[in-house]
Amino acid sequence: MTTRLQQKPKMEIRVALLEQRLADLVTHHESVPGRVTRLEGEFEHMATQLTALNEGQRELTATVSDIGTKVTRMLAALTVLGVVAQALGPTLFRMLFP
Image 1: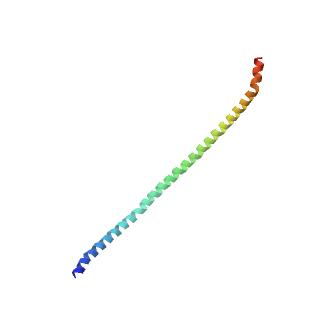
Image 2: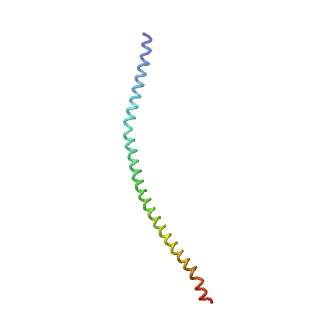
Image 3: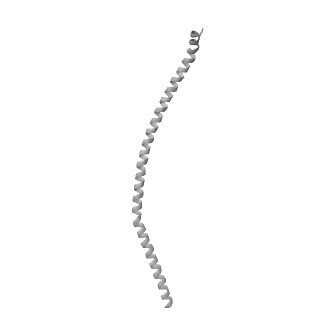
């Protein structure tokens, strides 16, 4: 009988420990949906920010492309003027300074 009496408190301790762990799991499980909802909200907010960033990136790309087009046209015009100046420059100098 003494063996049985010694085992009973151990068994009660184990059952109490299991009950406590189960209670902790239940509380943890109940708190998870709140955290998941909060994370979902943060992800939605980040998705909105990324959409705005994407729109800004598109606008910036269009602006840079427009500037590139203008620079290309300006370089083409300056190249043509340089070629014309090289062709007509000596002739004009000969006419002005014989």
